[in-house]
Image 1: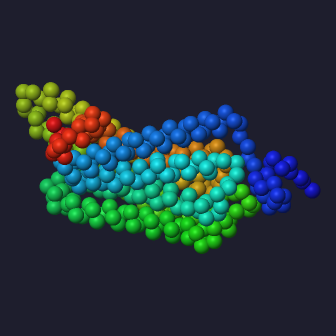
Image 2: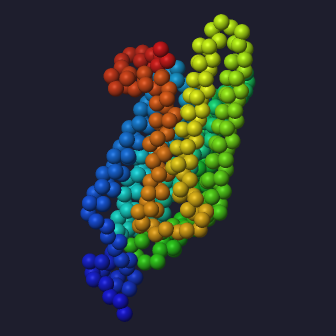
Image 3: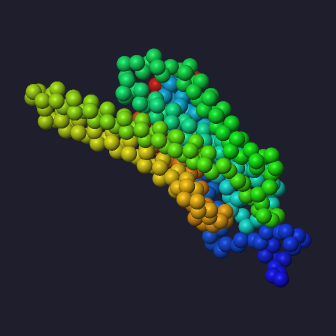
Length: 328
């Protein structure tokens, strides 16, 4: 019969039911904590800048920016709650109890799901703005966007509780020993609802936007064929084509890069060990997307750079700073 030293068990008094510690080198542990702490603080800081900018300046209270605000809130919560709790999950033993284990997984589901949902809403907004600009102001109104954002958050909460229902009903039912934090989800449902639908929607919408943008650029180029400044205009149009293609490519590629590895592994049927470095890396990519979102959706806007200067310079504390235009 195999025996374990007391130092190798999570709960030495429970010799037959305690989990064995999965120890890692001290250097690897310190590096892991430093990495997670850095990205947690960076995610909180960047998304907090977006939240303050859009919330403070009145001229930024537009339907599109409201979607960016909702995205920043969900990503802010990922940096504030999800990333720190992830550090506890990397410990050799889980000592906070079965209920806390489930709650530590419910919160990431809600925040990440809402983040993905907001990205879909932003895709729809950009699709209408570029493909149907004449009816944009009537289709995308402030009230409709507010309702859409509210429904997105309600859906995220409902979906998270649905996908983790068995775990919430009986916390710890899937643990094989004490000192383990294991949850079970309905993989086919999560793959279809959490992966295929949003990714397919984003890709289809952005590809349509790209096709329309290129078509409009070519149309403009044909109309200026007889103009004396044809050459310089053509160069400008080509640059705008490349810029549009590059921006859309970054948006889609970063999202796929962060989300696909985890879902592809689930789709293949391979179940890596919870404590394994590969499993942690795939999950880290998903939450890292919350750090990249403000860079992709906000730092590309000149008004955001102007807002950051006003915030850092404490200009927002002055009277009538609400009416300052970040667009100037």
